[in-house]
Amino acid sequence: MRTWFITGASRGFGALITAEALAAGDAVVATARDPLSVVAKFGEHPRLLAVKLDVTREEQAQAAVEAAIQRFGRIDILINNAGYGLLGAVEEARASEVERVFATNVFGLLSVTRAVLPHMRRQRSGHVINISSIGGYGSYAGWGVYCATKFAVEGLTEAMAAELAPLGIHATVVEPGFFRTDFLDAQSLVTAEPIADYAATSGATRTGATQLNHAQPGNPEKLAKALLALVGAARPPLRLPLGSDTVARIEAKNRSVAEELATWRELAVSTDGFSAV
Image 1: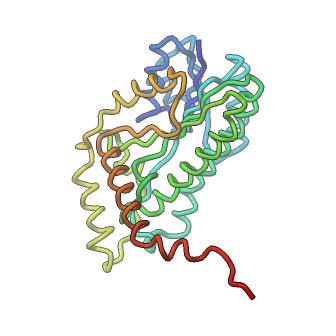
Image 2 (image 1 turned 180 degrees about the horizontal axis):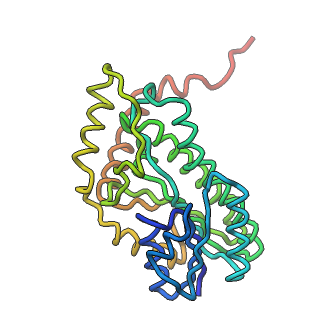
């Protein structure tokens, strides 16, 4: 029996992954700002521990992890899922909005990870899974600040994969595309005050997000099952894109970067070396 530690487990991906892990016979530490919402969803279960956790409170992260260890003795899989979106042009986003989304999506992820890793290092085993986004690989007009948080998650995961591999611990960043969850609802998305000059760019993205809400192509239940396949892999990947839209975005960006590099290669490599005096 494996023990999962899942943040943001009361709804969306977190709740679906919790259900799949329990169905697989595993134990789950399901964390949420309101743990009663987890109990209301799943009921009392001998392999489920609902714990209060606001990921922006480092002391709560430490306490939640200690509760997990006391109950189950170990943590095998960490799912850093808690997060929310900020929609608006970079200039439109207020400093307070930027700080709050980074506090949850980046610094909160770091607080939870720092609390869990000492136990995984002691075990010499474990799997850290950080939920990123299609926007963690390629940014979009109107999503710049949100994508910046997910770019940070990608960079952190790349480094952790290298740092933790010698200790028997895996690290994977999961990159979902647009899945039919409540991510584009007001409870999961903050929208910055619009500036008229950005109507054709971030404004168009706002309109598109409204039209796409609850019409996204991705099936979140299939994502949760994909996570079960991921944790069962003997050699899990560093990156796991999920959704045909994510795969297409990655392929398009890779082509664009390669073409731009070819165009600017001569200037790029010209900065090496020193002139003889």
